[in-house]
Length: 358
Image 1 (spheres, rainbow, N blue to C red):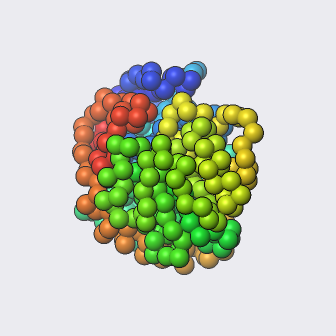
Image 2 (image 1 turned 90 degrees about the horizontal axis):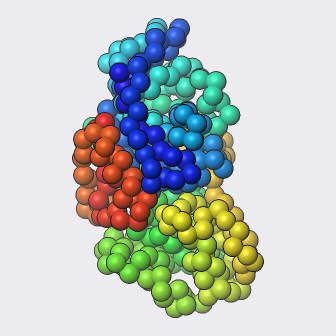
Image 3 (image 1 turned 90 degrees about the vertical axis):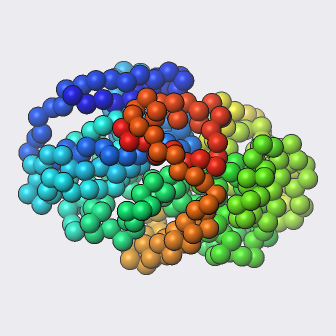
């Protein structure tokens, strides 16, 4: 038997743990036993945007019940593939559950992709699994940090790379909402080193102002109720909050100074993510879909150079952010449900990263 957490797709406050018998493995298939995964705002965004971007399709649920994707580690429990041995460990996209059966294709020393037919319409980035024995990013002592920050860090890295290629649209500053979120911290860290001439302004809730200041990644930190105090000058905005009212306020406050408006995620659940809230002054907000930018960046730089650039920034970020976020290891799928509910309800502590052993 194996357990999986399912969420009511149109009411994420409702979840259940489902027991199911493990099927017989097919030819060439591999069964992964999930060892650990993180629960972050990124997973909440996957659920909120699940219908729009196909995130519910990776690990199909039942009817209106869906399985939220996670990032984590797994060990091969059974294998019908000649090149993948029982006991081998991998890192990649996993369900909030205890097992996943995959059909490895494109197998190399470094990893493989899941060739399951239902996953092929989605971005190939999410179908790739790295084999830890040959993974240059793997650090046994930092597995929790990789799960918590890794996917979010790469999104931040890709945003900075995109902005820098566009010369930051002529801006001298970037306003980053939900500044305490892990993706925002990642973007601020990368920009601090790769685009030092661009001022980094963080917007966050009043209760998180001191935490965001203490991170050291921002030049200036403002609470949301001080949006009208934003400096007036050529600026781009990167919105991780998904709060339509906040985004409208930023556009209004900056007026003609706002050169580009980028929307990324939804950390403020129920505040208008993906909704049309009427005309908004200034540039039309443009959605940043990380997988597409990753494919473009890898094509432009080549896999090796892209990997090296990410790794360099990643190591620096871990060294700088190591003390900012404490890892909380928790056991069981019920703990995963509770962690997701806390983030979804806006009650999570930004100074704590959750890692689950299911």
